[in-house]
Image (cartoon, rainbow, N blue to C red; front, side, top):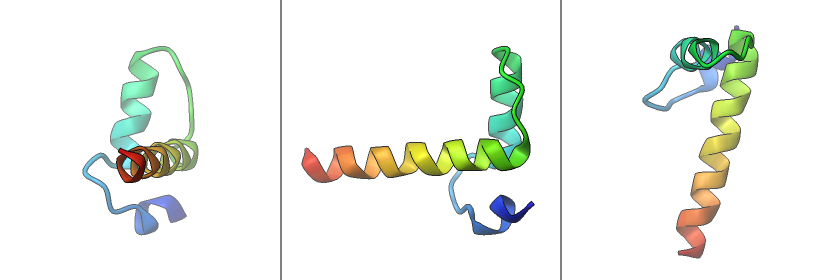
Amino acid sequence: MECEEKYKGKITPQAAQKMLKDEGMNVSVDEAGEILKFLTDIATVVVRNF
């Protein structure tokens, strides 16, 4: 699980995986980490452009 080592946010990939599973989306921990990274990148772009 390389995403666990690289990710430095407040929500862990495991927590994101659980949240997504609760909403009906079955993803792996690595996929959840990639989703978190994508959302972080989008948030960074929005803040820079604000």
